[in-house]
Amino acid sequence: MAGDRIYLYDSTLRDGAQTQGVDFGVADKVAIAEALDRLGIDYIEGGWPGANPTDDAFFAASPSLTKARITAFGMTRRPGRSTSNDPGLAAILDASPRVVCLVGKTWDFHVEAALGTTLNENIDMIGESLAEASKRKDEALFDAEHFFDGYRANPTYALDCLKAALAGGSRWIVLCDTNGGTLPHDIERIVGEVTKHIPGEKLGIHCHNDTENAVANSLAAVRAGVRQIQGTLNGLGERCGNANLVSIIPNLMLKMDYSTGISDAQLAQLTHVSRLLDERLNRPSLSGAAYVGERAFAHKGGLHVSAVEKDPRTYEHVPPEKVGNQRRIIVSDQAGRSNIVARFREIGFDVPPTHPKFARLIEEVKAREHEGYSYDAADASFELLARRLLEAVPDYFLLNTFRVMSERRFNAKGDLITQSEATVKLDVKGKRVMRVGEGNGPVDALDRALREALLPVYPQLAEIRLIDYKVRILTPESGTKAVTRVMIESADPTGRHWTTIGVSPNVIDASYNALHDSITWFLFHDQERAKRGKAAE
Image (cartoon, rainbow, N blue to C red):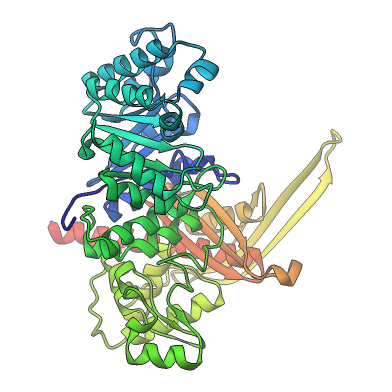
């Protein structure tokens, strides 16, 4: 077991997108893919080519990744079609990814009732489709849909489907518990029987969580011989979700002594990546989530705290730093130096933990998080906070006042319209400037007013565009007086994306804070880039 390599296949961007209430934009998919790549995932399933405009746009502008391989998902050819005359299969094979995963039926009941074809034709569909995919792509995978149901009903036929995929050149044959109804002991038994026909280094497992066993089923399959696990971040997926890679990865590495291709340093990013996904989805993280939740290593009063302070192993099954989390003694949180240092490395800010102001920064982060700030997905605001405390960030402009008004009325044509107007008074390089902006909403108007005031001095700001805006209510019990958190994602023509955050009981004030950080971050890096250019000359 020790040292055995397990390959990790993430399907958050496709399977996860089937979660009720989840709707990824292209920018979301790019940011999540980049985070998964930094974590060390082997395969990232980007979506289904031809299925929707978002997936097509993502594949057309796939991010440049260091390790992970973007994978396109789709079906085998349809009954009555050849591999060269099936538009659905053509869309998958014509897409840019060099790895494809094709799903096919392995349950005889589904073949006859759902596909309406013969058992032999289905086997031909699998073998021919995988042969074509293997010929045209670097790697092809076969997703054996409803395999465990099919195996229980007709084991010979289910195995024949797998053998057809193997003969077609499939690199991985993934056994799917599609309706999530199989229990761990059956998973381990059936996978063990399959390995008598197909070697484990060719097998993967794809479990759904309908019995709350997706993680256990995945680990049971590994024990029985499979060497690839498919799952999603935080267990996203339709119905009850998919196997949660955020739990599976540390279980494999810290409990079962398997190699995953993820280093110890990358494993320490796990909590950050988990929470980044939740921030992209604009939803609270599950505080009781294993390994990464706020309460995963929290201790409250009495004998537990005393015991943990003497020896953490008494109530902590792994050191929290291993997964990028931290111990919390309720009332008095413990400092997270290693987490802060790791975040510095990610943003290219080289500051040693011996820096005299480091402790102050940690306390400031903790205080702001208590107020509602969350820096897991707001790297630009985090960088500015750190730089302001540890060195210096210029004040490119100072706000004196802003005023925002919104009007709702009927125009001359009798149409109901809303219009917003913002007025800002700024000090810019020693001059007082007042400008007015109009927009579709108060934030748009405020953004336009700021640009009107700043563009004469900083014309490069014309390059910035706002690509995402999220608001979360932090204190819903306060009703309309609730504290809000605003996150703004910005981009420039070079392809850079950065996210900033603002918190306030007033949503416009929170929006201004996020806009201010966005502009400041851009101008700071523009200034630094100019300095480097002059130094090179």
